[in-house]
Image (cartoon, rainbow, N blue to C red; front, side, top):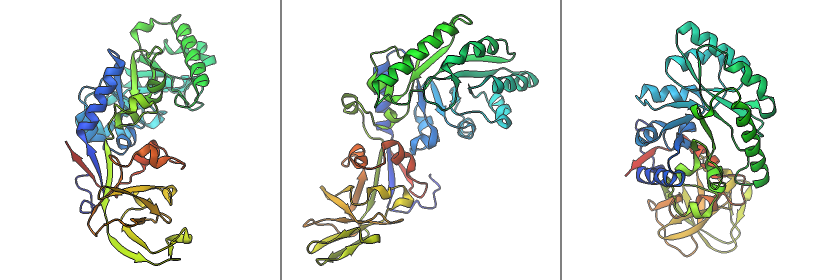
Length: 368
């Protein structure tokens, strides 16, 4: 974002490198000797893929969604092991192998293709087997693994380095998460009939699982996304984390409106008395969701004020009551003073959607 055409905008996402490293240290403390995979997909949840990768030098692994993200890291001289967590496009298999990028093996058919291409290249493809224990997304069904295992380990030029699954509801549904966990345990038992499991990297825990099921066996490695950026559904852990991103801008306009005046589209807010209104130059095109209309708060001059009216594409308004605010005064939308969990409350948003939704129109500024 250093070359962003919007660099002069007062609206910025302030990224604290110190807080990122702090959160990584918290995770390391929680998991002990286990390996850590930092999940940097979606531009590191909006925090900057390259910048975060270069900063997190002590991670054991990097996880991304697509090979394009992995190739960006390789081109920027990131040499850590990288696992692409998504399904593999057949046309990209060669790029995986030539750039030493780990592949998610989610079907026998695709692994056969990978084997053939790896053999043609005279190289081995590194693969993590993906098991679907109840997410219903990609991966071999947990109750159909016997044939899969019986064939996979016969394939030439395939190096199976890991096996993993993903929990769908570790922060909301304990019973279902335990069901998935037990299914995976049975899968590992079946796998042990074909290969020595101690030679594999077994990983199951995402941020939600670590937050809520840390008493269970976390296996060999944890995959950390949201916690890395400062958010956990476990309140005790949340108190130890620090938000990495702060979204801020400045007041762009001030006016006084009399009683019974409407504000923004669809007349979503009507003044009940004389009101002091500030306009803020950020909107849903920047990732500040329209869901926050009449629900969010902002922090200006040591006070919290409500956002009023519908969030516009490029602007929104706040009611400062009897407070003081002038054009150019700093406004925090979330981060230090405005809690992101609270901001998302009573909306269809979550820290995941907000952080990854901050668009490239908002320049990132990195601080210590």
